[in-house]
Each structure stands twice: as C-alpha cells, then as structure tokens.
Image (cartoon, rainbow, N blue to C red; front, side):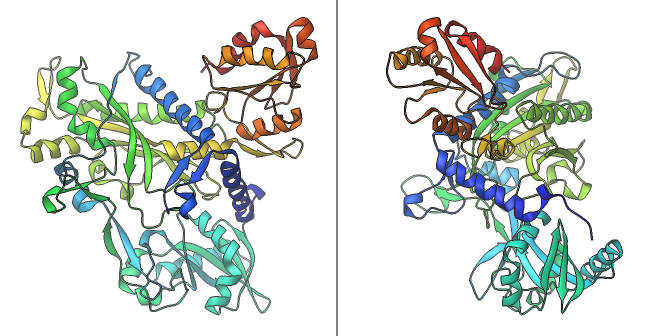
Length: 556
C-alpha cells in the first residue's frame, strides 16, 4: 500500500479547508451570496477584506501585463491595450464562437431523487483482492475498471483527491446505505485499503468512464442514494445563462450572459486595430465577469456560476506561434510565483492531445498553470490556461458577420493580409484569490489567534495597522496623524480597541504584514514599534521613517 504524507491526507486537507472557509466568513473575506435568505448555490460575495485582496490581484495583473508588459522573446517592448466589453452581446457572437451549439457538459439525472450531475465528475470505488503487492493489485483493479465493471459506490468529485476526501468523510455512511460489508482502513490519493471480515481488499477510486455511463447507466449506483437502476443516459446540457433584452420576451429578444470574456475581444479586433497604433505582435487584455450555469458548483469559490476572468488575446503572425506560446506560458507561470504562490503547490502542465479544445487541435500547444488546493490534494486544480487558439475565432467572426477578408490584418512590414493567430493566457481572478488564500493560511499555535495569513505584501488586503497602545495621553492623536498620512497611498487601518494582543491577533487573521504601535516612548523620542507579521520580530523606527519603510517593503 502506498504511503501518504500528512499534508496530503484527506482528513487534514478537509480540516484546513473547513478552517479557511470559517476564517473567510469570520474576518470578512468571502460571504455566501444572499445569505440572509439561505444563500444561492454557486454565487459568492466578497467582504471588506476579500474585495481588497481580489482587487490587489487584478491591479497587479493589469499593471504587470497591460501597463508594463514584460519585454517579448526578442527583448522588444510588447504592445498591450485594454478593453471593457459588455456582458450581454448580440447572440450571433455565440453562434459564431460555437458556444450556442457546443458549449455543453454531459449531464446525468437521478430519476428517483430528481438530482443531476456532470457525467465527467462521477468517481467510483472499485474493489479487488489485496495480495500485499499494491502495484499488482492496483493494476488488476484498473484493468477490471477498463473492462467495464461497475463500481460498488459512486461519488461526485472534480479529482481523485477530492473523491478520496469525500469517501473518508462519508465512507461508513455510504457503505451502510449500500449494504457493502467493508470498512475503510486507509486512504492515500486514489488508493483505498478496505477490510472485510478481517481480510484486506484494495480499492481504487477512479473516474467512471462516460462510455460506461452511456452504455449501462442502470448498473452504476447513484451518487446521491447509492441505488442502481435510477440513472439516465448522459445528455448534453448547455452552460450558458439565457436572458431577454427589451420589453417583449420572445425568441427574437433572447440573449446570453457571456460564458467567457474572450469573444468581446475578438468582436472588437477591427475596432482596436483601426483606432490604436498597435502592430502585430500585440495583445488585448480584459478583466470581467463571466457566467456558466454549472450543474454542480462546488469547492467554495473554485467552481462558481458567476466568476471573473483576467484574459489576454495576443495576436501574432502564424509562423511565430510556437515562440510566443512558450513565452507566455513561462511568463505567466513566473508571475504567479512572484505574488506568493512559490511553494510546491504550483505546477505547469502541458495538455495531452486528447485534452485540446476544438480551436487548438493544430496549435502550438496548450498548458495549464495548476495549484494544489486542499480539496484537490494530492492532485491539482486549474488556475490559468495558456492556449494557442490559432485563427479559429477571427475566421468564425469574419464568416458569421459577413465581413470576410475585411477582418484580416494588413501587415505593412510583410505586405501581407492574413488572419492572425492568437495565444491566450486566461486566468481566473476568483480561483487566483482562492489560491492566494489557501497558500497564505497557516496554523500557528504560538500566536494569539492560533492562525496567520501570510500574504505576499503586494496582495495583503491591509498593508499596515496603526495602534495607539492606550486610548489616552496623546497616543491616539499621534496614531491618527500617521494613519491619515499613510492612507493617501496604501490601504491601512487604525485600531484603538481591545488589548494589544487581541489587535495583533486580528491583524494576523487579516494577513497584515506590519503593525505600528505608538507607546509611551513615542511621546518622548518619536519612535514606535514595528511588528513583522511573518517573523514576529519587533523593531523601533522613527515616525518620520514609516513611509519610506513601507515603500521599500511593499514595492513589487
């Protein structure tokens, strides 16, 4: 049986996520949308700290990618401009892009419970004999899975790690409901060691093949009730939200909430080239909301029905696709590291050929920048995709709009007219914010609060806190002057309530890098104490040096 490290054990990751979500609610990072009415599944609100954290992420992306884009592979400056497109566009945009007919997920219904789920998120527990040779046992069980045997229990999950977590939390209950005479002995990643009358058996958690679901759905136990004979064949479910424009609600007024921000950029390609002094290679960037009617939103803000994207469409000559793909893949991976995701939880993964989207089949490549979230551990979840979209989108819009060759780019240097190819780095602002929260969270029993959020200073919602030690003797006035000066540049907070330990604890949970305390010594020599969040070290600096101190600590 393969061993597993404590940080990857399902119970520990579940515990971390539970504590993180509780902290997010308690400290005002993230709230359930419409909470006073019982909430609404798949929608989240950002509180006072959360909105600052997410804004810091988006501002850093805009500064580093649009206003101050890195030099290209040839060392020359990159042209990058921005757009802010509408959420609702002419529905022909979505017919051209293929979303109207092809933006689907395979959906399965439980006829008895009336619940539904995505067929590609169904995991099954398959069990076989355990001989002590875990590699051989696993191979035997996987061979049986490939041969089409039905699982003994099914679970809805995004990854094998999440499936293992669900099984560990609900396993006894699931086994009892399914009348399976087994007990869980150990879980490690996709391995499950089971016991039946003292005899060990090896279980493997694996995705239920969609072709088995299509061919023999009645043999698969429902993930809601574990009953067989109740699941339907998978059918396609369009993820776009429909709405109507105008006073009359009929087919002619039907429109969609955009499922991605990219199409607004492609639809404005000609406008940008006609009004801006951009020349290939150049990029168009956009940050904005998108909407997908996810069948099973899950894992906090990771998979939501309303989310925000940070996207670039970078237009290039077709011959330069491979070079620019590698450039943006590597630049974007390094950028996430630069804002605090520096641990082994971040990885860059190239797509296999069978994973490629329709627009990237003949492309230079597609890769995902992935983060090991607590609910995906030991696996990873997508944070950003970098794809070579070829010229698919511009060709489609040229055809559906009737503009034809008028949508081509005229390259004066080459004296050539063509549809540019596109490299698309597309990141999720909500997933990025969640990854930063997960990375920052650390249990620390030695602190007053028992926990600390170690945000990169550039991401920290509150950059500094100013405390008068007591609410008298002129200390609040000095602290107030410092606060009024610093707030002109940074988001800072002044707090005069409670004892100093409780105030430090609150700032630890908010992830504030520096706390400045005005005390009795300040009254005599104009110095105050600086508390460093990460090390708990304290030093004294002159009040006049605070602004210079923060500038050095907070600069990118």
